[in-house]
Image 1 (spheres, rainbow, N blue to C red):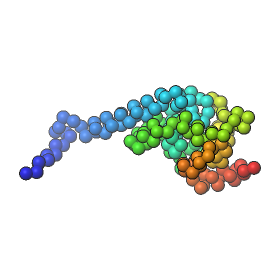
Image 2: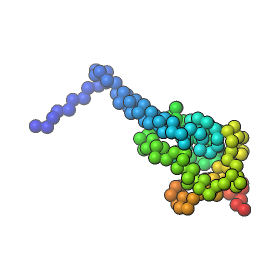
Image 3: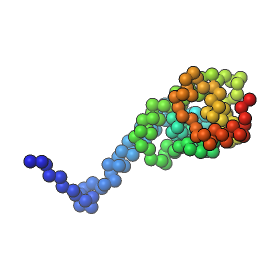
Image 4: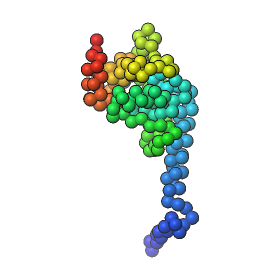
Length: 169
């Protein structure tokens, strides 16, 4: 005979229906914070600010609040989430743990030299960061061989808008 399943409402049982979800959300947040503690993720991926607190899910990087705001402006379709305030899916956490600032740097900054263009220092103004992000992600100025083919970087609208503001040389 097949086993009989009995539904017990949360109000009658000893566990509330939200506990399994909360345990899972806590586990995912801890896993994400562990990735953030790695030495390569302790600074913003796009400037030198210490202790980034946002995830840029499209590029799988950890960024500071200022760079997160600029990403939202430049890449209107980008997905930015606060590490401490947002809820993450299992797939998002897996992607962030598999990515990170060092892998992103190897891809997006592979051909960069300090003579080319300075990386924005901590505390940079938004305009300076925006110019750097446009060169780095939209124009793919320093991308390594094969890098552009492996990640979708932006929407057509964002590319068109940035190209209109700053036409390529």
